[in-house]
Length: 277
Image (tube, rainbow, N blue to C red; front, side, top):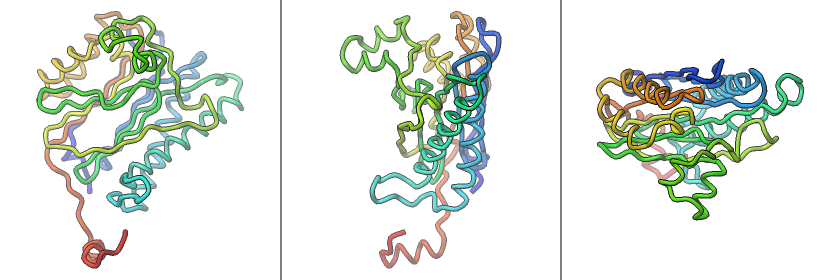
């Protein structure tokens, strides 16, 4: 199924007002419902190498994986859709490539990247992330952060040293505890959830979430929900007005209508006779 006319989306990135180049990378395969955002780090230009590797690797592997498998099938051991597992495995592979590149090219030593990616299918969304790039969902007028940051600050919140309100004002926000390319293996947080018509999902780098409070994100996306391009532009403008201390990237995707998967005749027969797919 081609989701280009089911999911409306915009992808924007900006260098910000302090950095001299952009180490963020964004990418998508719209017909397959795939959207990705990576925030690179480490060494001069090495961060953009890491983020670019992540985006290209995930795009290639997910595109190949979803062509070969029944995306809607549920894995019995995890309870997750196979497409969620495909997304996770692609990110694990990207980690290995970045790690190997960092250790075989002197100019790339110490590089790494965050990643947040989502994949729409059969009225559901698969979400995978590593690091502190985020995915939010706006449903009606309620904004919810779906991913949990892999950061020192989040660990301090979890342990009760900070409240969520205090964390939003903290200056110690940029130390990530998990990223692609730093270690030979990585744990990818994955989940999937139902999607309702009108839901808006926003992926962003910390160049946005560190500069703009969640309530301002909610108000901006709600106000410009009929014009996602304008919503993205306004968010980047707000981030720059608040200092623009980092690269700023945002992807906003909205479910325009339901997108149930077409069930093949073979799948219907298997379901009728209770055959496990």
